[in-house]
Image 1 (cartoon, rainbow, N blue to C red):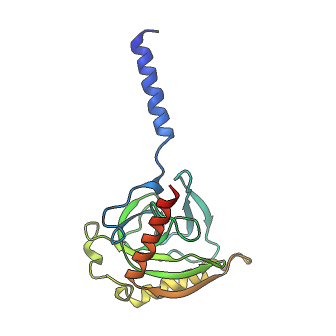
Image 2: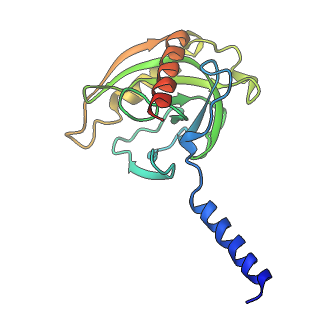
Image 3: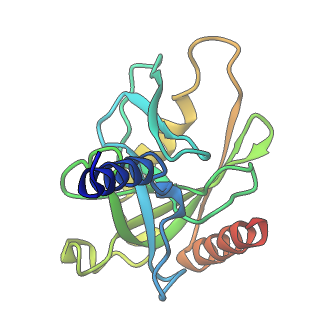
Length: 199
């Protein structure tokens, strides 16, 4: 085999190896403005009834389960990249867009509040967010949870109150209301610091 063919085969092998070792999407770097703005990976589109989850080790998105309760996610759901929450998983975010986002889509968001939640006795807060102005200025006037229409706040709480009621025997969910954007930023910073400390 001549030298050119050998070099071509080596190049193909190196390219294939790089593709196999693709970077985990959950390690995607955060912007300089964090926690005022942050990146999240979409896992479940608004209106979805399938719970997709991003595997923390590989970054692959897989179908975790179909919703047993006949309720759909009221907004998009995902995870903040480069974050580690109190439950040992990336920090959860539920966010609004004018059209549902596809699983695996990265989006830059800004926090407007926190839905305080306990899942099976474990803290499992959800950051509530909207797109940054550059992505969609529609939400520019929504700075705090109190700016979100009351019916949307009620839908969020109603969904998380019942979404795990079937089948019987699943973890009990306890909701403790909303907190403001400042509290959301504190939780985001804590989650980023926890991620960095583990690296």
